[in-house]
Image 1 (tube, rainbow, N blue to C red):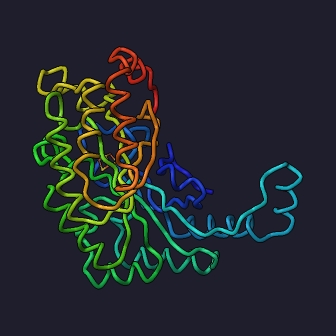
Image 2 (image 1 turned 180 degrees about the vertical axis):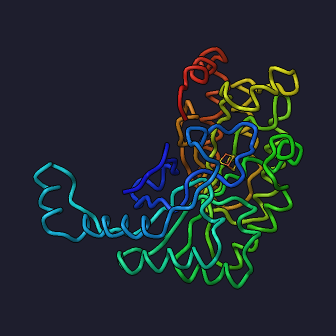
Length: 311
Ligand code: SF4
């Protein structure tokens, strides 16, 4: 398989086939982000011949009797039929409609057991597609996109250079709803800065309540020295939220969400991990967050943050 640099995928894509179709990020400008700094370029398309050869390789693992036997002798779990492909890269949904359709065609050609194809997407990637193209992409299997909206707080989106507004999130995700393409959101706790977390959470709930995300996953902002945000902090232009404030922010987001949605904190940035379905589990999750806010010390949480070497 061709893989370039660190491969990032959501926790819930653990059993998907990871297929590299891009590397890096077309935007590459969010002030807090260091995810693709290990690459010597900003963004790269994978050649179709590499994609095809990776699909052939994956086809072999899942169907070839000798590969299956070797895996069994090595004590590996029984090969499952591949049901889902997750396209690798920060925003493969930026690819032109024709290329995404071509990739879906290759996936079907080599691994017909695949039912759906997911990937990370930016709000601006959706805006590049017509309604007809979105509908055709859904027909071709694209579903369950993961979108790092980060927040619905316009001043934070502007300051962090995300390249879209809260209104853009609403408009573009309503278009996904119309095309029946399901999506998951990542929310970045702490993005609004010290003293503004709860207002940012309310603004985000306002946007989410207009939409139908399948999941809202919270990740906690961890500022790394290589980031532009770190320089902004050194210049005195931005102040980081405290760790307890971040938990109050999550609590506020949870409280203001009025839609049925999975709500989770799963990645390494979260010292405490949890998952539940709203509205059913709202009280239980709120109580768990209250316990953290009341009983865990700021210093303990800060220690977790500062020793987190990698997300
Ligand atoms: S769009 Fe995502 S990957 Fe690209 S710079 Fe922003 S946070 Fe990083």
